[in-house]
Amino acid sequence: MAVLETIRNFFLPALFAEPEEIVPAPPTTYEIRPLTMDQLAEVLRLNIRCFRNGDNYTKHTFDYLLNEPRTLSYRMVTPRDEIVGFAFVMVNENNAAHLTTIGVAPEHRRRRIAERLLEQVESALKAREVGTILLEVRVGNEPAQNLYRRCGYIVVQRITKYYSNGEDCFLMMKSLY
Image 1 (cartoon, helix red, strand yellow):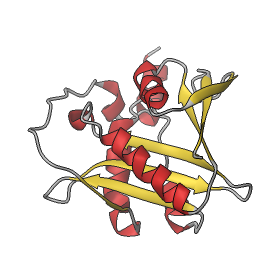
Image 2 (image 1 turned 180 degrees about the horizontal axis):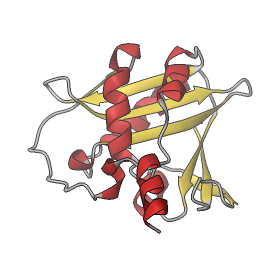
Image 3 (image 1 turned 135 degrees about the horizontal axis):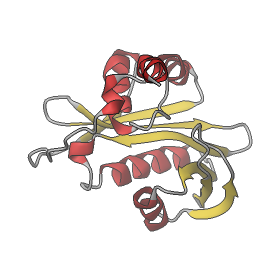
């Protein structure tokens, strides 16, 4: 059993073994800016903190998204230019878009950051005359589902065993017109 624990610890970084103690950040203002390759390292660090269950993107995936012309990416920053949130959306050929990921630093949650990032994404998509946006959300992630519902998204399908741990997801969509 000790051998299995050692092997598991080798593949599962210590970061995931202990829950992070979250202390809310002091009140501040936020600004949305484009996200570019210059912020790759910072987004990777934040991504791990946002998705501690292991279903986070790799450097390769972010590199692809940041270099793919059909991808729009945004970051929410503090006055000190610290990234506290990000959103990536890919525009498809069929006049639809896919919100691939959106994350907010745990200490900055419940401040409308994700909602503001969604509004930015949707505004940019409307300017490109994209009619529909889709996303996947864990069945167990009720706070995110509630956010999406408040923003006008509806569940259109349940996809079984979507995530690497076997959890289902809801496919949600919103018409932008």
